[in-house]
Amino acid sequence: MGNSWNAKYGLKRVINASGRMSILGVSAPSDTVMEAMKQGGQSYVEIADLVDKAGDYIANKIGSEAAVVVNSASSGIALSVAALVTRGNRRLSERLHQEFIIRNEIILLKGHNVQYGAPVETMVHLGGGRLVEVGYANEGKAEHIADAVNDNTAAILYVKSHHTVQKNMISVEEAWQVAQDKEVPLIVDAAAEEDLRKYVACSDLAIYSGSKAIEGPTSGIVAGKPQYIDWLKVQLHAIGRSMKVGKETIFGLLQALDEYMVKEDKSEQEKASLQALMALNDIPGVRVTIVQDEAGRAIYRGRVHIDPAAVGVSAKEVAAALQQGDIAIYTRDYGVRQGYFDIDPRPLLGDDIQVIESEIRKLTGGK
Image 1 (cartoon, rainbow, N blue to C red):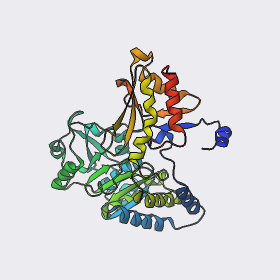
Image 2: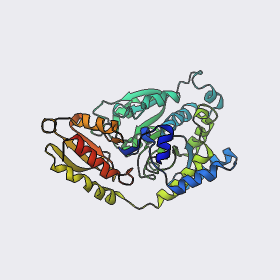
Image 3: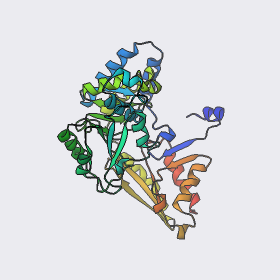
Image 4: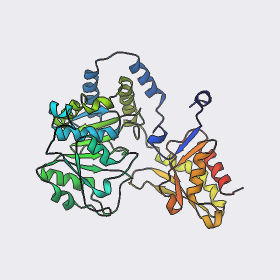
């Protein structure tokens, strides 16, 4: 964001070292994506036709049978649930929360019922589903899901995310096997995942964010079986009306997807850029290491461990102070209670990494 905007609206400069996070605007699309949004926004188009053609284009790119653009992965959950609960019935869709629908149970592993900026269960209820949690916070087995399936089951929902409990949880492939055995549709929320083909292959509906890995405008993709995508399109004239997608967003997403499918893997360059933080190891009580993403993606981050006994401040206090500075630096702070925070190199621009190193040095008493 240019300084003129910062001055005009009173906004701080933000350095995003936390990843593709919604609270900071997720990602910074390329000039070509922004140009596609401008051209798309400044022309007229039959929206229903655009929805169908864009869906076909995306499906062809990611290897699914059908797809539809939605306004976020979050609404993708609500719309997918609504599609499978109403089964494309227009009246039930229009009266979603007024009519009682008996087959409305959505089975979810307890360890997957997470808060990602909003609770997963809220999106399930918004879509007219009734959540049935199975398993335990530290254990999710195939039989936990299988045993819960009954005549009122509308779908199984599997959340693939770093937010979820990782240990003792069945894989998406195992959940897919249960869904097929029980003949129940499987929805996979793969919002931030980078492999766009993988989750389409082991689900009936796969949900991706358009603005995370793909780095498009704020948007989402639901891809899967044609019947279910048709049912979801009925929702666009019901609860989906409050989640509608602008034409400029669709054109921007299609351009971002084109670019994403031919993008070279930058993980090694990003990993190398983190070397700029290694100088912090000369500060007593500060230790910097490089770690791989907890959900197994090819993403590397700088982990800054802080020993409060030696430094005089905790990791939590340093992370908070970085956010509150004149330049707001957002780290990935899930581990602050364990004494560390992470620096995600993917969203960094210009001299961001040097500013981060210098601010951490100041806050930890380094010279």
